[in-house]
Length: 167
Image (spheres, helix red, strand yellow):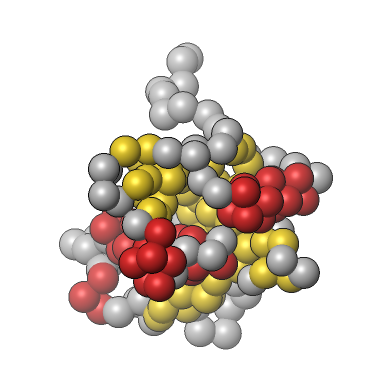
């Protein structure tokens, strides 16, 4: 959501209801659907930054995902309702790094944090397929969200690399 031309922190997006075909052999949501549902939410974020179909057609630019890392915290079962919150945690004029909090709500149970994911996005010239600086009006929204979100307590393991714990 954009408030006063600034991206709300955390950015919020409602997701879908988990379908039976999203489940894996273990009876919980398959990895692919964590990515797919969060990707749908990220398109909403990108749209709030000002990049919609009209923008892509006229400006020939958009954001691409360069990297994603997911941490699974609790299982998500069939019929759970998904929602997402995102914080922009870093940016450099061409790229931005966000963390997404994946929430699930099953039946009458309270909502719970099911996963976190970090995403690295690049602003890309669609004609040349090269990373380029994003325009000032987009930079303003990204930087405003980053400033607002920097006041929030960091999410556990935010920004950490994937690794094994040493004994």
